[in-house]
Amino acid sequence: MKLLHIDSSSLAGNSVSRQLTERIVAQWRATHPATVVEYLDLAVDAPNHLSLNSVGFGKPDASDLTEAQRRENTVSDRLVSQFLAADVVVIGAPMYNFSIPSQLKAWIDRVAQAGRTFTYTEQGPKGLAGGKTVIVASTRGGVYSTNPALAGLDHQEAYLKTVFGFLGITDIQFVRAEGIAMGDAAKTQAITAADAVIRTLGAPAANESEAALAA
Image 1 (cartoon, rainbow, N blue to C red):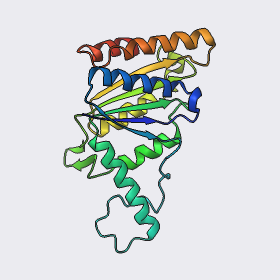
Image 2 (tube, rainbow, N blue to C red):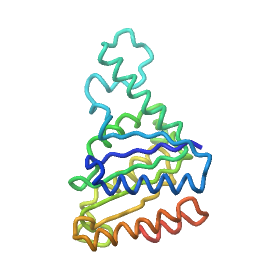
Image 3 (cartoon, rainbow, N blue to C red):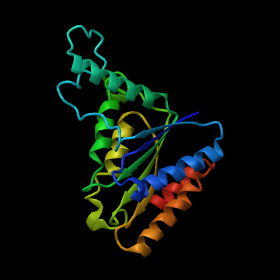
């Protein structure tokens, strides 16, 4: 089994999402000892945002590409191949201004490739990256999941559910710690709740436990 561990927070050792992804990976390896882990730190090594040099994903005839376009194609191919090879993907996704970090969005833009991770058919789009488990460590400064007044501002978890679902992935789990900017007590409570979810990962009833706690 291959696990791709992705962090995207810019806060280094102060990041709660990084703490949670580390614990998630440790828990997964405890229940699946043969797991091989590959690590990607998007705050350190993020792909460039899409440009005219990087939109020609996997173009078979590279003879008319510039050197810059060939370099960007190589990056895109490496990232999508790494993603497709993983059985489990653990992603640290803090909420930045109601959405995800731009470096995580840049990675998603590289792996969302027509013909590799999705395709268009006469019946509409079809995901090609199914069969994976995606576990997202979702961190938020405020509380959005239980506050109707703020729920509409959540373009973080909602976006990730949509884009990975579009790629054909149905097993998408969230380990959520929210309210972490609302004082020390709230932060401790949020991390404790997240740790309770993490301890269920890999167990037979993990999905049901996570769903109850993160709904």
